Amino acid sequence: MKLNFIKIVKYFLNAVLRLFERILFSRKIESPLKIVVFKVGNIGDILCAIPSFIAIRKNYPEAEITLLTSPGERGVPGAKELLQGAWYFNRMIIYGSDEINSFQKLKKFISDLRRERFDLFIQIPPHEWTNFRTFVRNIIFAKLLGVESAFGFRIRVIINLFRKTQIDYVDGEKETESLLRLLRENGVKADKTEFDLPISAEAESKIEALLSRKWPDFENELLVAIHSGTKKNFPEKRWFPERFGEVVRYLEVKYAAKIIVAGSEDDRPDAEIISRELSPENALITAGQLTVLETAALLKHCGFVLGIDSGLLHLAAAVGKPTVGLYSILDIFGDWFPYGDSHIPVYHRFLDCNYRQSECIKKSMGMISVSEVKAACDAMVSKLTYGK
Figure 1 (cartoon, rainbow, N blue to C red):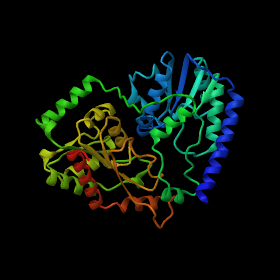
Figure 2: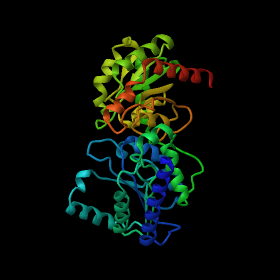
Figure 3: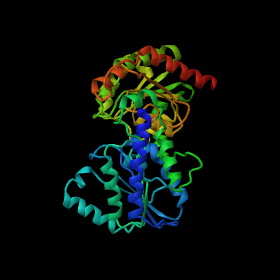
Figure 4: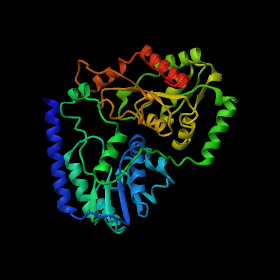
């Protein structure tokens, strides 16, 4: 009953949004000349949307396409670090939350965008419905830009309604696939799922030189990348570095694995703790030392990536590498799994606690045992070795 009620609510809200679309954007443009694609978010959000970006470009090959995006606060990595130079956009307009935090700033922001004379606005919507007014606001925002046509205003997930029921009983649709399905519903064909990161030859050469210095025969070694960090606003998703240390020691002893501890500068303290469990010759810390695209180039040489639910797992999937991911009860299971079938998720649900509380999210991560993660890594190595 609860799940059916959620479907009814979602259908009703989307019907209202469709009505707003038809009132404000009655005209459908078949061959738009200037398109603005609106997608906000951090590394993981942008990575999951790349196949949608490519589909839009292939459907409108002659159009000038601009990505309008924001990572939120300034300094947080997002599309700028990931997509600079990507062939599927002519340019990017990147703004911070501080640029629209007053009426006068917002007015100027909209006025500047109006001068661009976009004729089609495509929203790549956020994953979850947090506030219905946000979607209505975005429709009005598109209208204020002066575009003749717009689409993409659809609620896909209502996580805060009967949250525990959804997480316990629903296996979600991966974000990448969900976004492509939304585009197809609006006439944008997407026959296949494609990722294409603008990794430069210089980045590739830098990584090959780095690995060669550390392990001259690295191409014949099992390289495993580790990422223990998470966003600062979700510390409850943490799986302690000491546990990762136990797992990497196991991989080193059993498989002679070479361990790369990746991430940002904020992940450096955890990286130091993890690497202490390894022989120095088998550990390489790159946390805080590489750009996002250099990290992508690095992951291409790894057998697999082990980490918590974060952008790095999606980065691995984007370069075709499998992952062992550790997930909390923060989201519906499957929604934020990396794209593809080669990944192994580790998680617990059906917990006896309030899924809205941070202590319950911490509990779900704490229930993931070292032995479970070792077993998942064993299964991954077996798949890599035997192709099963």
